[in-house]
Image 1 (cartoon, rainbow, N blue to C red):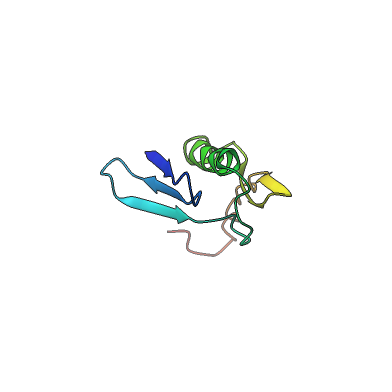
Image 2: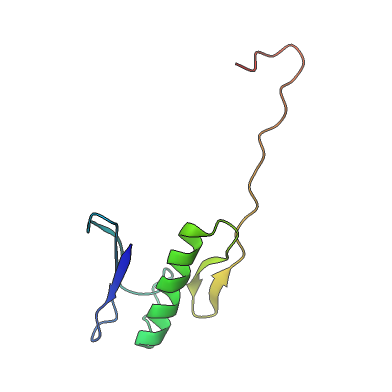
Length: 86
């Protein structure tokens, strides 16, 4: 995967290994404009880390919350007696 950040608009684009665009993020997810190239780069870097490291924090929705703890995985409930678990 690779990313590009437009130096003027700070729009973030992420591309997969086939060079297909998989993410377009023109601003923070909450709609706040990126304040700098570095802010956009920090967000996309955390996005890429969180895709490969399933324990890493996820990118946040706003400048006030730039990263969020990854939600815990939800384990399926155990089969109930008498139920068909197949």
